[in-house]
Length: 467
Image (cartoon, rainbow, N blue to C red; front, side, top):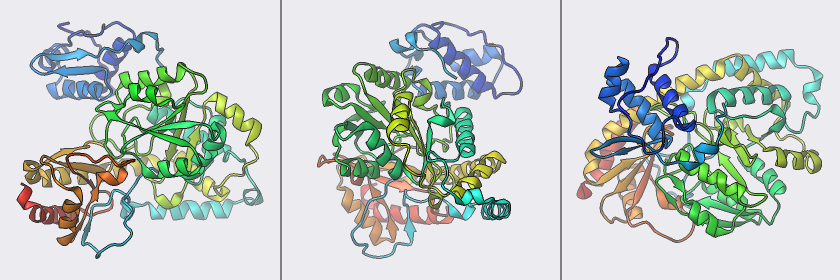
């Protein structure tokens, strides 16, 4: 294929138009599998756009698994048989638990926190005052057990436009944190549900589900996400995944793997996918990766989200979108559970969303975290002699993997001796298997830009013998 006839229009970024055209053509079978796409230079000349525009479109398609780059040959449409039958449809965070800290470090690269210095205090105070001024006595009575309808409508509208999630407000349950929602989901799935979970993973979800008595099976990952062959061997009937940005590896599940996962749910009754979309808002290159729930035609995906990462952990408002079969079960047997979020807080968040404050706040935070992300990446360049950097362009942390066989705890202890606190990947692994190469997690949200630069200089000193 030497050229693509794409009509470009004003009003939408050019790379998005090119990306959408090629994606739809692949889904509709108009560009067959294994077809070679035009080179970026050829397509740029043909469409009379910059080469960087084509690069952005191709990179987004690669991120989602629609195309593949073959070294020395070019770009090819990925082999995804499931696309032929699909119709186009338009808190989690873990930080290692330390029983005792040796000393307070000057620089803490924790992946736990967010930048609270940019919290919209004045806006939140204004909304709080308005709500308490306008409050009616009904807001002090017991509300809808699923959460206030206004808030559910606002979240459903946001999820459709930002994440491609298809749901009615009636499918959503509001809860005080993901832990509560997982406990409720446990009631719906039943104690006999055997749950597959990736490793390494978000340990809090693992702790909650295992503490409730579920049999948990850990599933290996490859560069595309949870391995379906291992999932099939596990005998599980539910799979907990983070397809848009896996924590802590940063892996983006390809469209091929997503479709394979959805196919797995059809091969036996009562199989479900638990999609934790914990920080999908923060992607710094290309468009956000669409949610898995948006392409689920069989009502098998339970979608979890939270405002803890995008607004503040103390907000403690999360949401769960139930597929129709589980929604019916909830309404029949569990609708007596009272909402765990106060109606006052729900009304405040509703106004924050519907009056445009949330969108402006998100844009501000994306710019802030992108700046810190870029600064950290640049500062880490001298470490590339001894470490491989990965997990970039999304989320709030980067990964440093030692090129040599090094002991993870030794790297952590050396950093701490220089006043820098870093975190090991092994604390997020389930089981006793140890990776051959140590991996360090560096969070950058809850640390200033000057501290990032100074902290990395300390790491260079601490780890100089490995560079």
